[in-house]
Length: 326
Image (cartoon, rainbow, N blue to C red):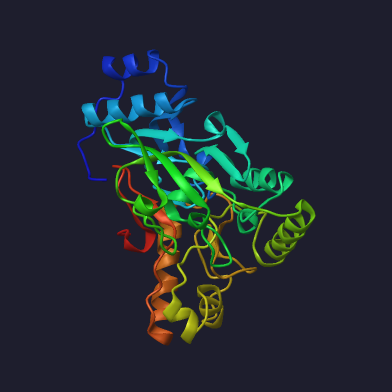
């Protein structure tokens, strides 16, 4: 998303958008309350839509008025700047999370909470989403990033995706058009908003599916920090790195960086690919710690760690966190 001049977000035009009915609205919304790292300043306007038509209305308005628009779910993969965001944040969450199961297919709106969706699939005897049970995000973001765990991705189950394009038009895409790859899809960077997806699963006994989910959750509790705010894995695992020196967590731990700390941001003692907020961490703390980890690892083994987490600038630009200028 390109940088733009700061609009007058208290203009009559914006008031008309709010009055037209676009869901729950909040001016000067603290972004720290809307992401898992609990970091970030205020957004000029936060909107939580209840229908796809409302999503389309907001997207079209932002385009016509040349106002930066940021779309989020649970904010589990985002680092917001301490200055906040000058524009509109469109949050697709609980208000847009309806789920319908028809045979071996699941049709769910983008705001559906992923662990809850996985449990619904399990209860219906539908297999294939077990690897998502511990991912604390929403379906829209998962589809956009082809997210998952155990080196699996949600794209394996996607049959169709409904999106709102930059002009506010509603479109339906098939799986091939989404071009899913490891932790990527053609939807990224396209400016489209994922609003709904149809997933295709296999029928299996719920007991067997549940057993796999419980094993996944036990492993997550053992390995990952759960009590301190974090964004999940910070650095991206590549096949080249994994084959030669191991996953990022091992590489960072081997470099002696567990517990490394800048300000109130710390490399987790439990898993080195997690950076936790000890309470009051700033975006600068996190970016500085990311830069420190990358520098030490590069000097030690020559690999450049790239970030899975995305930094969101005050103007709405979204870039891998390691590319942010400190």
